[in-house]
Length: 326
Image (tube, rainbow, N blue to C red; front, side):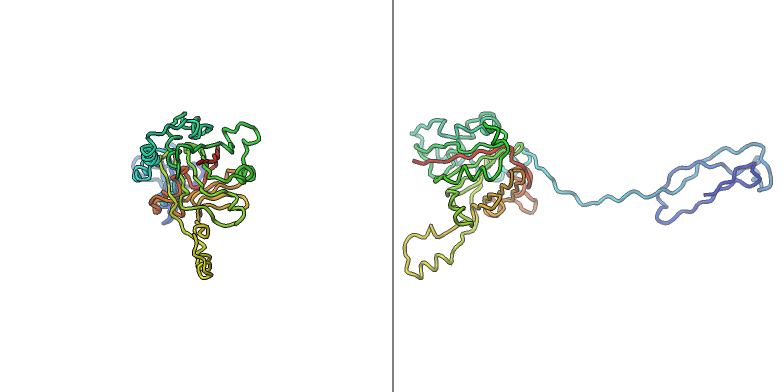
């Protein structure tokens, strides 16, 4: 734009050019009017009676940055939204399984201390609701009047010693490696409380460096009242066939391994990717329906956010109990 003010010996005029890209975008600019005498337009060589009043013209401005129409995935799913999802799977309810088992043992009285009585997570995070402890206890396979639980690892937010507030896999494996009975893991992450039941001693995994466990392993969500069964694969079919060809006709359950549990160099896993606890418990992931599942809608990503609200999360507190059936 070039402007020569009136009275400077030249005309007062303005020129500007619109480009196709900017024709719909304008910003205001104030420029002097062309001088007039009454209704007569003055020539460049005439002098006006008074200075012209400014008027407003429009000048092109850059177009706005285009916004992507792709909707970003939700980073976190609230407890309320996941509860709505869980209502579709009432057949997998922890409380329903618990009530069924309690009816079978109706004439047997159990002490509350037998049912995760040492749990800080259940008492603090779930407001001391003994019903949650009872539901989890009675959902364990083979539970009976003599079944008891004992806390063997307590780390993170509710740790009773400063040393265990900063957890790592080495600490955990040291606590569970000598346990010869089933174990229950209880995790707290944000608003969610969930965990896993392992039927097989963890030292078995240390010896094999491969998947181990059995079909009675399961994951659970106390927040959503869900028991998530093992639905994974069995492996080592070749070992079974080889034993049978060699004339072995005894039980084969010890030859069948399930993709239920796994110990890695710096992680433990429940299933293939269903629940992976890694590193210092700040690098954890979940993607159900691999080895454990209830039939979640994987097209909507429900399998990634059901347990902890997100596919990646940090464990705030953790407890491990040994389960003695006696």
